[in-house]
Length: 262
Ligand SMILES: C[S@@+](CC[C@H](N)C(=O)[O-])C[C@H]1O[C@@H](n2cnc3c(N)ncnc32)[C@H](O)[C@@H]1O
Image (tube, rainbow, N blue to C red; front, side, top):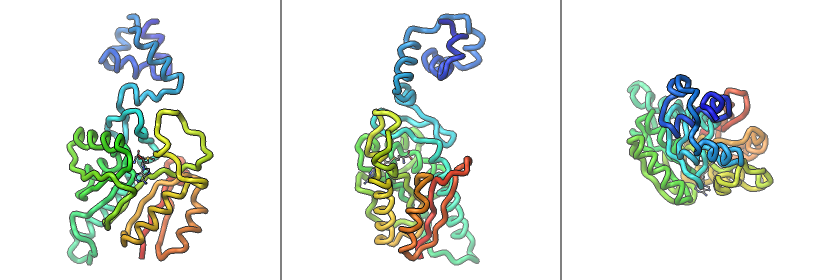
């Protein structure tokens, strides 16, 4: 097969760029050369359902490139809105702290937890774009190993903890927890169940996070949820002294909730 034919295939350009260590322009200028043998093996693997991110051990998120490996959830574009909301909230609290006329109940730098950190992308982007001190937690050793590697790659200082959810008071808690219904079909067999499933309605862990945040007196909580979970979660949140607001992605679908406890 010639490069020009491979360029017409899905992922063709990306695979060749990675294999040949050349950019797109080079591929177009040399499109009458033959593709290397490995190209076919990789295309076959990808077509059989193996995530391409695991093959090249990299993934783009929030405009940055991160390390990823099999067994750790591949970050999704959907989560970028959660990062955006978290950065917006943290920055507004930081601005309030700088404005002497404005009374702030917070100590600075703010303390933020990214609970269920996975590959660490949320924690790292928050650390990059705010002055907060960031703690990241996960139950999975594989996830924590990848997250630590990513923090090093991006030169960000983050405190990692292996624990069930979180165990301390902070100013802001952010989480993209497992929130998928148990009956749901996973997109592939290579990402871990631990990253997806949250019980029959998917909200078991989300509810545990909310109760724990209340017990630990955490005021600000931002959680990613599924587009169909707004009603169930509203009924649950109405039991507590809090204000909450759901936020949507660019496609207009519910992607998360921002909660302020009284
Ligand atoms: C949906 S993934 C999110 C990963 C990452 N934050 C992201 O947005 O790409 C959920 C993560 O939660 C972790 N997890 C599941 N149950 C947990 C628990 N009880 N305590 C801490 N982490 C947990 C999983 O290991 C997984 O890494």
